[in-house]
Image (cartoon, rainbow, N blue to C red):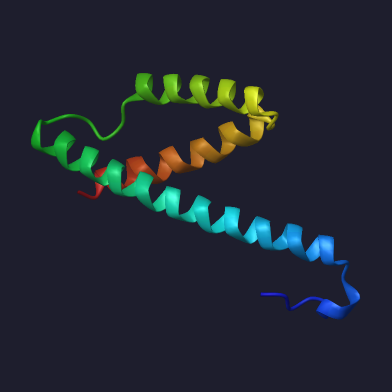
Length: 98
């Protein structure tokens, strides 16, 4: 979906790269959907077993792990931490609503 410039004015290599980015974006969204599906199951199990919605130690370990993964992948670990903090906040909110 290219609405900003006409395709005739854009370098074909740029168009190809943008198409690849669109594919990766779709994969990211699908992976997030899978992740939220799994965390919903975790939330149900937590409720059934009388566990708190939030597990601060698990969250801390996840942040440490994803920061390392980010560093290894050449991605800004602060960006990844912020992204995962947002994910975790949403997951906890969803668990509290179960």
